[in-house]
Image (cartoon, rainbow, N blue to C red):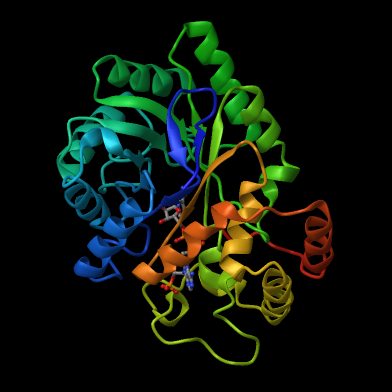
Length: 323
Ligand SMILES: NC(=O)c1ccc[n+]([C@@H]2O[C@H](COP(=O)([O-])OP(=O)(O)OC[C@H]3O[C@@H](n4cnc5c(N)ncnc54)[C@H](OP(=O)(O)O)[C@@H]3O)[C@@H](O)[C@H]2O)c1
């Protein structure tokens, strides 16, 4: 495994991180989930991502990692999405942040959260209220660092400006979607803005939920035991399952084979080519996927390979399924 600093912070995270959305605590059986987390840890993954909105994921991730020294892993969770019907049971107000931090600490079974992330931007709360609440939790030792997820470049720039002005501890991360098909962070200035403000990127769905592994082939139907085959988990991946996208993955897989790599390793190395991407968070429903995917950290992509990748990707357009 290789490690990168998370933005300007001193925190080092593994280039491949492990997430828990639509898997642990829900679609993946608990013993398999635990086996995946153990194998990830053994292979050097130290960054584990979850959320208060991922069904029972916080409990599964927290209880499994408890077997290891607390200093040996980085535990990240998030808040924003509704936790109940009440008007204050959502968003990024001081009240909700403080209450949800306590709730996550209990579910994770830990004394502190390494990275507490605002899962989305909250239009109904002044940014300074959110930043001050996060700063207070940091001062209390309940969280060590704070970050955001899917904030726009303008929102990130404003938060960084207010943070500096008010002398809050700086945000250190942003978690956007990023993969060969979903590249808005390149076009909408998110990469440059985060880098300029010392904020590292932890990118999610780097394998386009499994489409960039080559398991979905044009005209061959949906493989059993896949995310797309499960009615509880296929609500987002379905938007990728277009003939032109799948035809493109066949070409990408052939290019990966020339490099002696699988498509998933190639797709992960491709997002990691960006220096401000600190970690690519994968999901995994079985141990073998983690074993295959971590090998991406040793794959170097030449300028020629990147140019050929662009050519293949130019055949697919009109992507904006998940934000
Ligand atoms: N901040 C946010 O708003 C946000 C949103 C989404 C996700 N996330 C985070 O990002 C994490 C990763 O997202 P994701 O699950 O969409 O990532 P992904 O890595 O793009 O997709 C993961 C899925 O692809 C399949 N897969 C992975 N490796 C494979 C391999 N080598 N061969 C075959 N299939 C393979 C597995 O699904 P099957 O085996 O079931 O087919 C796996 O669950 C989440 O767990 C979560 O922590 C954050």
